[in-house]
Amino acid sequence: MHNTHVGIDALAFAGPEHYLDMTDLAAARGVDPGKYLHGLGQKQMAIATPCEDTVTMAVAAGARALAAFGIDPGEIGTLIVGTETGIDHSKPVAVYVHELLGLSRNCRTFETKHACYGAMAGLTASIDWIAAGRARGRKALVIASDIARYGLETPGEPTQGAGAVAMVVSDRPRLLELDRTRFGDYTRQVMDFWRPLYSKYALADGHYSIECYLDALEGAWHDAANDTPQTLALDRLAACLYHVPFVKMARKAHHKHLEIEHGGPLPSDDAQAHARLNASYAEKVAPWLELNATVGNIYTGSLFLALIDLLRQGRASFEGREVSLFSYGSGCGATFCVGRIAASAARQAAALDPQADLDARRRLDIDEYERIMAESETGDLVETLDPSRYGLDRGGLFYVGTREHVRRYARA
Ligand code: CAA
Image (tube, rainbow, N blue to C red; front, side):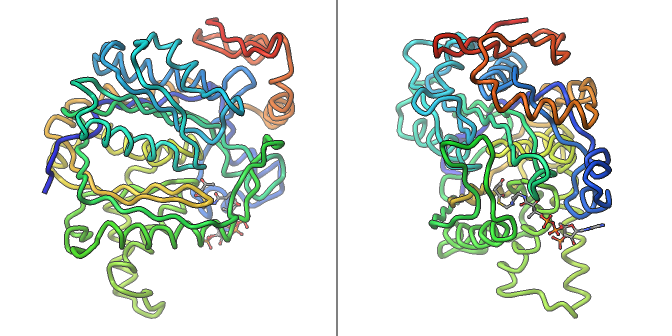
C-alpha cells in the first residue's frame, strides 16, 4: 500500500560536452573492442574537461529540472547534492549550487557522500523531511553529480564517465511515487572501491566490487521484503532499475535478483531458467540502459539516469505500474525500494529527454582525451582556465580557476 504520495516530481540530466568512443579507447589500449562494447556493454563515455566540475554539472541539471517542470526556485526548502567527487574537504558542493540556482536563504543545504550511494541517501532524507511535516508545502531538490575517474591504462578506465542528475522531491510527484513501507537498507565495511584524500583517482578491487554489489543487493532486498516478500515479486514489476557502473553490471544484478526470488543459484544446466532470465532482462532492464551506455558511469546519478531513460520513453501503459530501484555505494551501503509510475508520467517524457544534448557532444580523439586527463590533475591549482581552450563555446557555467584558494565560476 502506498501510504503517502511522496516521490519524484521532476528529473533532468546534464553532462560534459565531450565524449570518448569505446572503439577509440579499445584501439589505443590494444584491446578487442568486443570487451568494452559487449563484455562491459558500453558504447561511449562522457569526459569532463577541467572547466566542467561537480558544481557546474549540478547547476546545469538543477536549473534544467526546475525550468522543464515549471518549478520556481523559491519552492525549494531542501537542497542536497550527493557526490563522490566533492571539490573541497569541508565546503559542500551544495552551497555553491544553492547560490548559483538562486535558492531561498531559508533552504536547508548540505552534501552527502557515500561513493555512488550519496543521491539515494539524499532522496530518502528528502522523503523523510516531507513525510515528517517539515517541508510546509515546499519541495526538495536532490542532485547527483560526479566525475568517475580511474586513470589512464587502469582496469577501471573503460568504466569512467561524468554527469549530473537533478530530481525534485514533493508530495505531488508527477513522475514516480515512492512507497515508504518498501525500502530496505544494507551496510558492510568492505574495501572494494575508495578514493584517499590525496588522490584524484578512485582505487578499486574491481572483481571484488562486483561481488560486494551483488551481496548488498541480496541484503537490501531481504530487508525491504521483511515478512512480505510477495510484495516485491518480479511479476508485479514493470521495470527493475539498478545502479549502473557499466551496463553489464545491470545484467549481473538482474540475474542475482532472479536468484534471490528463486531462493538459490540458477543451475547452469537449466535451460528453461536461463531462457526466463534472458526474457526477463530483455523486458524489465535492457530497454532503459541506452543513456548509461552512452554516458558511462556517473556514480551517484547512474541509477537515476536509467530512470530518466525509462520515463523519456513515455509509455502510457506503465502509468500506475511498479518499478524497483537498487542503489549501491561502494564501501559499502545500499538501498532497495519500490516505486509506482505516476498517472501523469507519460506526458512529461519530452521534458526530461537529454538526447538532443547528447547528440550535440563532440567526439574526442585519444590524444585530446589523454591531454584532458593530464590537465585535470592540476586544474585545482591553476589561477586562470579558459573554457574556449577545450572548445566549450556553447555557453553555460564553467569553473575558471582558483585564485587565493577560492574556486571561481563564470558564465561563458
Ligand atoms: N568480447 C566480448 N566480451 C569480452 C571480451 C571480448 N573480446 N573480452 C572480455 N569479455 C568479457 C568478459 O568475459 C567479462 O564478462 P563477464 O563479467 O560477463 O564474465 C567482461 O568482458 C569484463 O572482462 P574482465 O572481467 O576480464 O574485465 P577486467 O578484469 O578488465 O575488469 C571491471 C572489469 C572489474 C569491471 C573493471 O573495469 C573495473 O575495475 N571497473 C571499476 C569498478 C567497478 O565498476 N565495479 C562495479 C561494482 S562497484 C560499483 O558499482 C560502485 C561503482 O560505481 C564503482
